[in-house]
Length: 299
Image 1 (cartoon, rainbow, N blue to C red):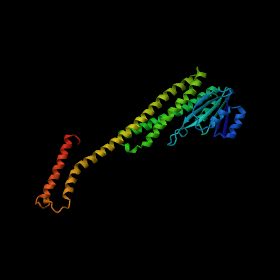
Image 2: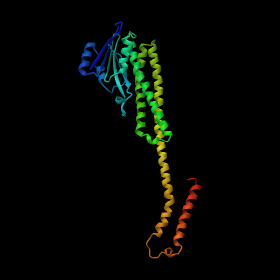
Image 3: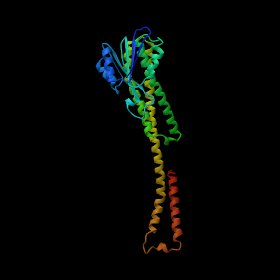
Image 4: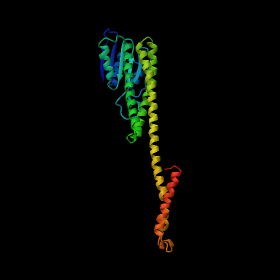
């Protein structure tokens, strides 16, 4: 377990950041600050969704930030990682499984420089930085959708797989779900800090992100449907060509089959002009089928 403790320049609050928490290490921290054991268990649960809880000694927040280099999987845990926050007026305690560079930058830019002098401003900065990961992820998804659209409509759809499009749609859907759940956290913070410009900006950006991810989900679904329709159209064109070949050669095959039978008495076989007549009949059938298809506008 990695623990970093920072103090504000005016000594108004302390920020303790824990990475890769262990049960034994968190027991010591819990004893030191008298943390709620239910919330402590939630902070260790990797799949826990965003929420806000008020407590007697500490308030409790769970956020999930998006991982930009997430693997091609379809779960919330693989696409995002959890950040648990215990806070009151004097102490802010953050717990996360994976390294969080955005939290480190907050310590360097705001705590050490003395630009943050209260715990609630630190909480808002953490929420803002977590929210920023959704902005970056949305930009990546939007770029991928534009690339897929270019490939699809420039007749390069063979380079696109259904699985890739599904993963894209899944990522947009999961991100939107996480944003909807995070709305509870932002609303609770808004009620506590109504006059803060920071929380107003966070709320406005949250609404924009919801609309953006809603559009991304819709675009991904439309792209998936278009790709499947395009593949279906190509299959129909192949079947059309095969059907046309069958229509041409089926009557010709019938004629060949008739005169290929090994009966002893077949008068046509002894005719002097039997062969050219048969070839001419086949040619007439071919021309008739061709003209009929042209008249029905099948060619």
